[in-house]
Length: 279
Image (tube, rainbow, N blue to C red; front, side, top):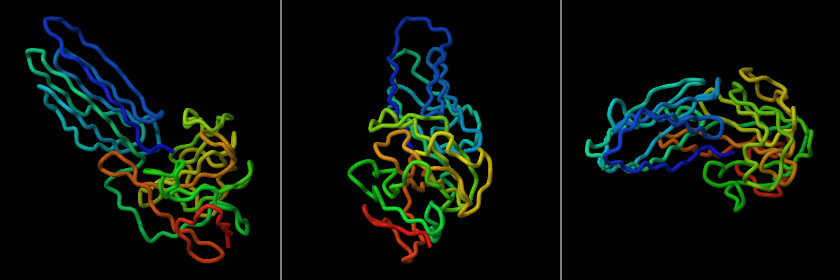
């Protein structure tokens, strides 16, 4: 999972050239689209959330030369599912000697929501089953930054995946049959994203082709069968990726520590090789 997308764009100044209105749209991770419409020394920014059920938080940052933000604000923005909004305009100096460098970040969720730090999660598999930790927290491989507290469970293809916590299915992908040990396959991973009552988001990743049981927009309860594990996306070995994040006002996702209830008691960040049993 990648909870942020960063792009770096620049526009050189012009002198003595007449421009008609020009538009450019860029979309990131099939979620956030940024539409920029240029009219001489004005750049109008509009954003769209492509996910019909999922709220996202975004943030623009700029390095401006002879420009200013007008008709809005570049502060963090929250987009509900499917929402499109005009955000602001960059206004350049009349002499044409202006330029800008732009970065944009986004994360699942609403940064105003406060995570419940006392929640205890079920293990994301069937009762009385046991699976080992394939990759733990803060690994040298992929569990860093927005994935720092995620856990990979060594589960064979087709293993039952159960909801570790109840909530709303806000994003779902199950049409991929592609997987492999390459970051370029990241968007090919099948997944289910569940939004919890406190606004946090749980990702169940690398699911099997057609491996989702509920539909987008369904509500599920803790322990409910939601899918089947697989090996799709950026994955070199069949497993289930499970992580919980919260949005921040920086537009970045914060990886949250997960307390699991196991047959041996409550466990946080179990290390690689630990065998966890569902009570």
